[in-house]
Image (tube, rainbow, N blue to C red; front, side):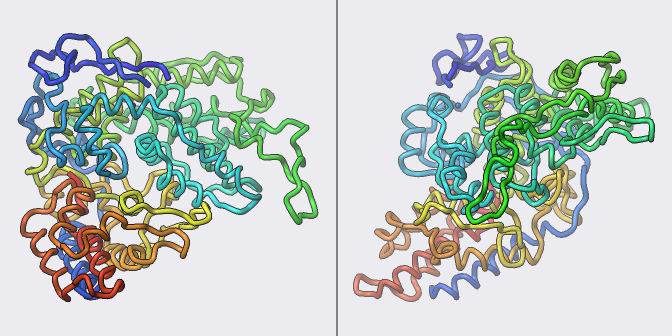
Length: 616
């Protein structure tokens, strides 16, 4: 893998614990009680704490009070959806380059990937954040989702099996965590596409495209997403045709969503993510209806790439007829020139001249989107929201946007540098957020399950990962990866829980759009069964290290607090959980069932605690 650069924050002038940060213009990174009783207590605990801030909701609330940003003084974060009230200080050098404690290392790991282990904590403390990130980004890529599906018999696994395998078992967890974040911006839902055959392969290839995008360039990612056949099915570019004399017009779905959701957003932005306004104080639109209809012409003429030799080239076992081979799922959509609009297209200040060949028109369009000044703050803020905090200060957003604009080596859109800027920023690594009630993010339900699996050694006996679609909020997680209900993801970046302290503070809480009375109890009831029994009988956790501590509830809770929450449980919560585990008493002579019930109750109580559910 090629080396990649991280832009040194502009104006850096302070000392740093990492050699080179203040002396080099860039940093090179190579490569980036009774179990049922305890469960009832957990339900009550989480419901009381969580439901005070949920229910219903609105989108695009006003911007929150901006943080003071900069060195050692990040205050209440601003959402970027409004002006906030903080001045944006000069950018500073990274102050927090080394994890001084296991807690700091675990906190970093839980933002950068899905889980924290003792080995990972030791590695981060030994290497420092930057070197650890360098090693992870430079490491070998694991088996792709498409290859995993292809290794199974025809029809043996689904797209759900594929993505759970990727999230739970892939050794390159940091790539998969970042790809999952991208999947909530560049949305394709397995629930909403229906190719006639090879559904799992099509979704797997789209997932693999996002994984590659983690360590690539935004411009390449944008093109790969645009031409991916799964996206073609999802947003109607597959088979999209030019205008004709009978009044047919190009489908505008992708043209609209690629601007609104995947690149520039609805409103013009300052470099710090705050919205530009006109003389009347109203937000300035970033594009018009005419921009949409003109851009739609560029996305005509594309369809699945199926050579004649692959048509009806595969007969499924036991089938009476042949179907197209699956090669089309691995290739970008092909341009059918006769279906492509040759009309002039004007959008966002760019012009595609009449009679421009399709590939050249696409290049103009994607270059225009890639170079739009909104992209850095728009994409950067959402990545901060997915990995670190729902309400980053404008200064934080600007530092990430600066990294998007220039990675320190003159390259725009270097995603490795963008992700590094998100994770290494003073606001992400500094201690101030831990004491700030408005810092952090609600852990998504699917992330809680993946963290549980990775923390406690989950395995699939037959390597089929039959976990399934967990979208049912009343009995499951209410969320399942790659199954967003629409192109708008599971939740909006600007969602504001109504009649809540968050709304009063003029902040946002995107993940709370998933929270209601049913989903809160559904999560606890679901985990009450999963923690002891696993999923579908064959996907189970080992709890090897935890079983060794079952006779010492204080030590057990101490371990769980570190690995699951980065020690976010306060002393009172730790004491309450530990006290609950002491009844009934468990001794060396106790039955295995009694010992296991103590273990399972401990895990459930920690994963039900508000200090776990809100990640800081």
